[in-house]
Amino acid sequence: MVIVGVIVILLCMGIVMVHSASSVVAANKFGDPFFYPKRQLIWAVIGVVAMFWFARFDYHKLRQHAPKIVVISFVMLVLVLLIGVNRGGSKAWLGFGSLGIQPSEFAKLGLIIFLAHLLSESGDRMQSLWRGFMPPLGLALAAVGLIMLEPDLGQSVVIMGTTLLMMFAAGTRLKHLGGFFGLGILGFSGLVAMAPYRIQRVVAFLDPWKDPQNSGYQIIQSLYAIGSGGVLGLGLGNSRQKFLYLPEPQTDFIFAIIGEELGFLGCLAILLLFGVIVWRGVRTSIFAPDEFGSLLAVGITGMIAVQVLINIGVVTGSMPATGITLPFISYGGSSLTLMLTGVGILLNISKQAVFPQR
Image (cartoon, rainbow, N blue to C red; front, side, top):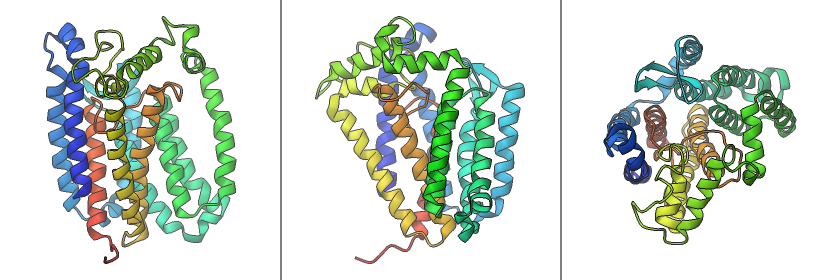
């Protein structure tokens, strides 16, 4: 119940902060300051229903359907490239108008389920480069390749980070992980060099004041928001950056508005809540009844942790901008629903875990 309590707190904070961050944008764009929080509330209810349903659904049954789930994930990733809707320069949505789903979110969870199944059967093969290390890595790279065609660098980084965490937990050799990490840096550099807008993001990360009206604009406004919040913040609803200074403050940069309105203490509280989720997720993984459940818990917990680190890293100027939401808090139906579904699976593993008696 600890995880459920933390999730409820984060969801409530998310809806409140989505309204606070988006009220000015929504009033100007739609004539309704409650446009975003109303939709966020609907998705939160759907996600909570999914969370409690999967909390009662035996996670072992997911193993039986793991191959189907990963095939559906890849089919959706291909479909979005063919008939997807372009939003914000990324062809990442299936649907029409304001309604739609983001296949990369589904693929993220689907891949975790299949990798848990695959890695739990690998055993000693994980010590082998070609029989243990390459198959799961190749599958993740195939998914990342399709997602990069949208393009969506943020989701790609989350998938690769989660995959490597799961492979580490499954017993792959550190020298294999280290070698791939080195190649990954070269590959990432190549991807950046291939797209001018990514080069601009790296330049903005290194020196946002070099182009303060263009590539560095968003991070500068984000840092203004966080810096002006101080220890206690300006007060809920009193953000200045949401007055059309910080673009789309209800999504990727909502943590900046939290820092501005709730200050360092508000940011620290959110980090502590995510820390509790990670702690409980790791504990569930350690005491899971089988290896499949253990790796599944690692994957779900890792997905949340990696996404939180990337989002906050970008907002605070510690990482180049990639475009990724803050779990359970940022506006976004697909992300919220799939994250809550993952938490539901984690709860079911926890329910069956054999924890030591106190």
